[in-house]
Length: 461
Image 1: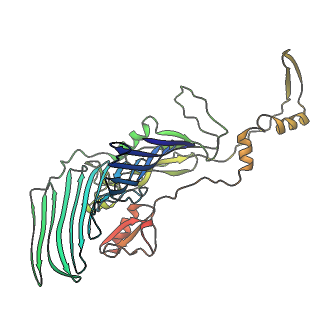
Image 2 (image 1 turned 135 degrees about the horizontal axis):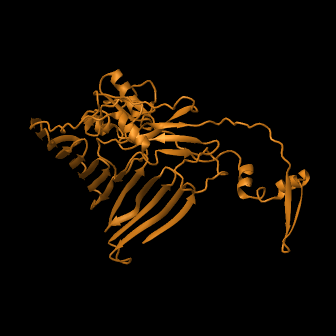
């Protein structure tokens, strides 16, 4: 059963509801799953987000919990059920999600719990499982675990990473008496990399064995013809829809009628934008997809022609790995999409007044239903009265403009990034927040040592 409510708060459409699944029927209800969800469609960006949480749910007598989320448009696409791979950095607009978990503990002494996640992005497939067994008999206790994480990446070349960790430990009086653990890692292909560690612990003796081996050739992606980055930008700016009008914020008084003309109609106080998604502007790039750029590196810039109004940069979302050579760990740790310039927006708020023109105004009165017409000179007193009681004065938009007060719309701050030490996760940037991940990585390289770039909200100074 699905219960849902729709709310239109332009440009947003909110979908709020609850989904319930009961099997085999309401009375027996062996499986009873309840999911509260919120969907948001933004018609201006456009984008779609969906968030859901499992609440008050169970399978037989065992509780089940977890979250899921989906983001489409804007910074890209991601669908996550229970979170993401530990080595993957999710987009800043994806909240931290609880794993899909079920607790099948039969009693207070024995606790058995399983957690799982699955995530799909435009370039990865991720799946993982964590299971634990804990038996606490007072003086003695047993702890067992199984961890499994798999990450598959499609671009710039196919690769995968599978990690598994399994173990069992016996403690007496809080001290480890015996235990066994196995840790395995397999990555590939081209080259293949395998690593394993195993240990057995009995009283005061520990036997440890491990291996690490790499084999096979580096299956580098076959080089393709070099690409002229400037030509790609020029082609993108010539594509249909690249040029568009930008209305001034908050204005809804002037609209344009639909025409078949190829011209772009611009609001008197609006702006004209020229944007493309082929190449990020103003940053050095080394590749476009699998192909390198002409000259090894290229930086494309845009500027309006002489005499045009002042221009500002228009920002868009790009996958950095498609334009910049990154190490494997950077491909996983950097955001899937980052904000780079994709064009320019130019226009002027200056009002240009024509020379004064003298005109004689009159008005016509039509009497209904006789359709009798009378034309006379323009009366300023009658005009002032019409301004107070006419259709425009009584319109809801006019009253809203006069009486709503300050702008109460909710705005979201742009994402920012910080540099932290990889070992301690403490700030290494003296409190500096960077507007882009690219700038943060440049600062991390200048600091030296093992550094990570994370979203600013993850750092507690």
